[in-house]
Picture 1 (spheres, rainbow, N blue to C red):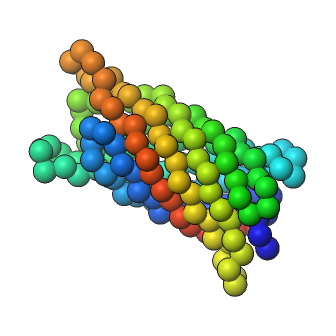
Picture 2: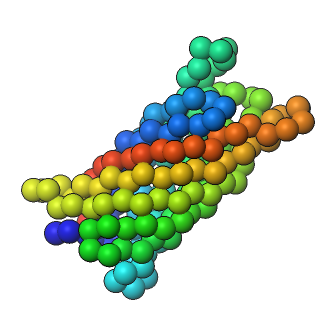
Length: 148
């Protein structure tokens, strides 16, 4: 199998680099909804934790995302939008952002593995201070898709 089956549920690990919060690591789940054989939409929910020695607290980010993608064989690419819930750092407000991603899906034995690289555009407002944080940056994720 070279592509994820329709209705596949995926679990993944991820890394996200940002301009203002250094790097974060986390986990997520995703559900694929096929529209036509080449196009699908994914619903994603994940968690990222950012730790920085300059902060007194850890920032936890909970992205809730929708990703429209096109597949050509084992390769895919697309754009997405998300609502990013900020927790643990009361100086950042929840925010809407977007991303673009490209990736590959491979059947490896009993696994349906995938890996992707993405660029996140996210500038949440500071709470109580004028201006925005720049949480934009490159990220990567890898995991497994399973049919349900």
